[in-house]
Image 1 (cartoon, rainbow, N blue to C red):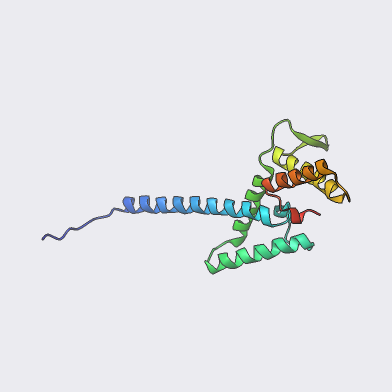
Image 2 (image 1 turned 120 degrees about the horizontal axis):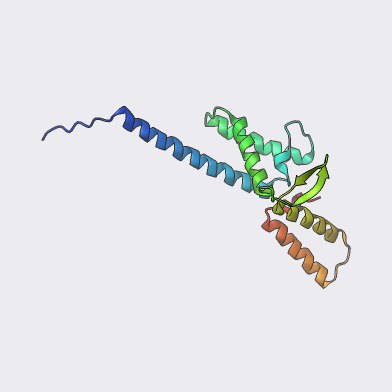
Length: 165
């Protein structure tokens, strides 16, 4: 039997390696987005806006999660853990606030319009209603149902009701 010799060119190797890089980027992108969305259901609302020097109780939860992620990334020999955290925060903000909807404005700021997404508007307005309903000491049947529906709406939007104060 003849020996079969396979010659792989540099071009073929590069093509294969390029494909591996592209696959890894897609997997990382998807994993970071999924992680960011999951954190939106677990961490306090607007957790992605917490800065490193924030010492509030809500921030402590965010810092603890960040520390756990950094540990896993460092164990995996990741070269820049802060970059991953920055992307996760960015993806969470996009998930919660969405892209600004043209023509939808909240207020004038320095004669410029502040634009918020429909999702953010729904979250903010439903939280206001939720808080008002929770403050009431006695609710009739319709208002109790309204509280249940408002709670469900917030949960459907990814809000953890235990983080609402």
